Length: 365
Image (cartoon, rainbow, N blue to C red; front, side, top):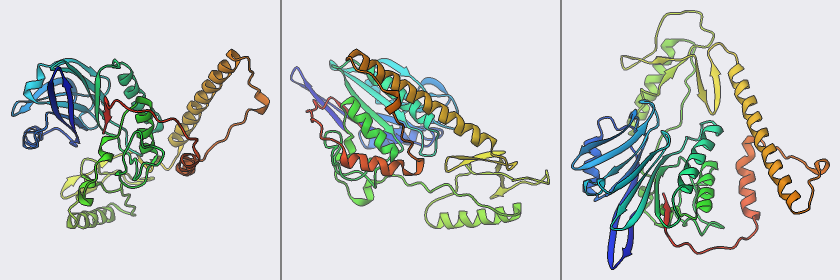
C-alpha cells in the first residue's frame, strides 16, 4: 500500500507492506534486498520467532524493531528504511502477537501496527486475547493521527462485499470464515478498511502463500509410520511442497515398549505425550481428561461472559425505567459446527444500517 498525505503543500509518500516471514533467522539480508528491490519503506513482519525486545539492523540500512517471547513460535516486528528510523517517537511491544510504532514524518503522525492472529485451530480464548490487545492499541491512538495495520489475520473475508461496502472491496478470496468475520467486525468498530480487497488481481497473484493441512498418520508400528512418512514426503516434494520437520511430531498410544524412535531422512522426530488435532487434545495414554477439562473451562468462561452481558442489559433497562424479566429470558446455545451457517444467515437478514463516509485515515490489510 502507498500511504499519501498532503500537508502545507508537500506530498508525503510511503510504501507500506506486510509479510509473514516464517522465521527471521537467516532471512535478514533477503528481506532487506526484497524491500530495496520493491521500494518498500515500512514492512510489518509476523512469525519472526526471535526472542527478545530489541531493534536490530538487517542490512542495506533497514532496521527491525521486534518482540517475541519464544524462539519457536509467534513474534512480530516492523522494519523501517534507514531514513525513517530517527522519526520513531514511540514503540509499544504489547505481546508476541501485537506491537506498534509511532512515527512523525514531515509533520504527519503515523502509527504502524504489526499483528499476528492465532490460527484457525487455536483456542477461542487465545483469539479473543489477540483482538482485545489490538483493540486496546487502537483505542490508545488519538483520533487525529493516521493508522496502518499490517497483519497476518489467519482468516478469509471472502469474495464480494454485500452489506460490508464501507469496510471492504469485492476482491477477497474464498468464502468468509469465522476468523474473516472477526476481521470485518474489527474494521467496522475502528472505522477502517480491508485495503487489499479493493484491488483486482490475477488469479495467480491473489494468494501468495499456500499451506497444506495437518496430516495424522496412524500405523501399528514405528517402521510403518516411517514408511508412510517418507511416502508423504516424496508426494509433497513432487508438487513443490515439503514436510515441516520442526512441526512434525509422533506419539505412541498405550505404548508397551519404551525404546525406539521415528526418523525422517535420518533425523529423529520429536516424541510427544499429547498433541492437538482439529482443535481437540489427543493423549498418549488414551485418556481424555485434558480435553474434558478444557471444554469445561471454556463453558465456564462463556457463562461468565453471558452473565456480564445480562448485567449490562439489566443496568441499561433500569436506567430507562424498564425491568428485565428473568422468567422470560431465554438462552439459545448454537452448536460449534453450525456457527458459520448461523453467521451467514444473520448476515443475510441483518437490518439495514446507516453508512457513514470514511475520511480514509485508517487502513487495515
